[in-house]
Image (cartoon, rainbow, N blue to C red; front, top):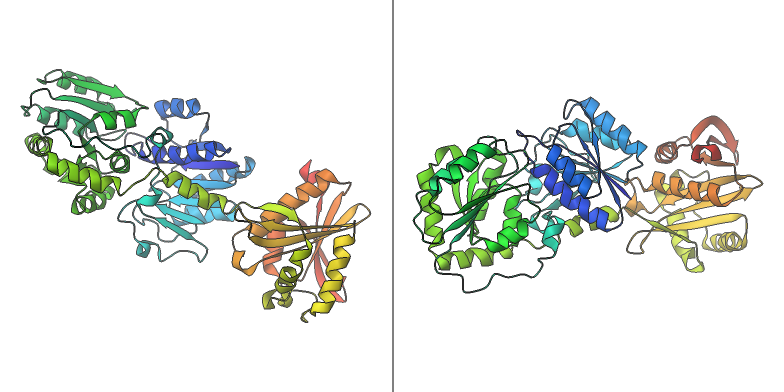
Length: 502
């Protein structure tokens, strides 16, 4: 189980995309999988974090979001034999997705506002409260949408806080303040907040300011914090955000992914909008009574920030309401929820059993199956039963049913062995077609056949009009040997040799 994540971070891009991908990566890793990150930007602090987490990082110096970027990413994903490719960033559009899909990889596309003209991904994830299905009308029929805060990606450090509640009643006057404005904060809005906080005159007030690894303003902020009349502590590259959020009474934050972490921890927050994509989040959360939205950061003065923060610090009733509303929005199961959808596309094999007789008969008689079979006539039940019994007792027939994680059959594949060669036949339940199960099923079973037997070559005979099967076998590594004759019909012979898997 390998997860391939294409994402970037920098002073301009910020670190939010990487941090939410990290949450998904941790869930994948916890389930026993391997994670490979690919970044085109340099981010030393994040590199250290990922390495500490036991995740591999590949640096790809390339124009972000270009066709070359997509092709190189797809090439690397194939080389690592990744089950899924995750793409997160506003530089990645429709063509990028299309190239990844053409490389035979499953694709999860993490989105915030429907910025792509079309969606080719297997799954589109938008964890925001305002996520709208209408943004994704131009999507493929197979594209699944995961929308809303139930899919919020929270990192591993938050998992241990499930069920935690703030002690009520809250203190009449709050005195612990957390400031966190993203991993980069290129406009140094944090400085405006710190300078504004000088206006507060609440006895016993103390603050912690969290700075990301891409924040270049540390020295200036350190100097400004020393001028305050109350204690303020600067923290860089923290890994204990839940502890800090549990400690704080009020937060000053940006309108990005941190909002979902704060909501999970029930921390009343004052939001400053630092990027256009944060506006809808901040506005919707304010309507729901979860935050105080100050609007676009350039339009707010330090004095106004201090005024709004001060009002919230002395309003216990309002803070209690915000805490209740926010914790109803987000639980810590978002990463697991997303992971369950990724694992839906994994399958296991079991041998065909007597009880499968009718299911296989129904699959075989499906109109679309008969249309591409060498005999288009419907199969009589009596004939099918005789044939099925003969296959069950035949030692030279290897017959599998593929089942998903819920034990639902998704397809069948059969190998009829003669000497050192086998002939393969495969079909997928109509409900599960166009999801790349075919090529995956072929590759997995071919590998097993070659590994556990003396078979050196596998043959597939396909009707020329059966384009879906031709694509599936080609994707699985089979090579066409041209036209031949089978049962008096034209057939394309495709083969794969054992050396392909050595």
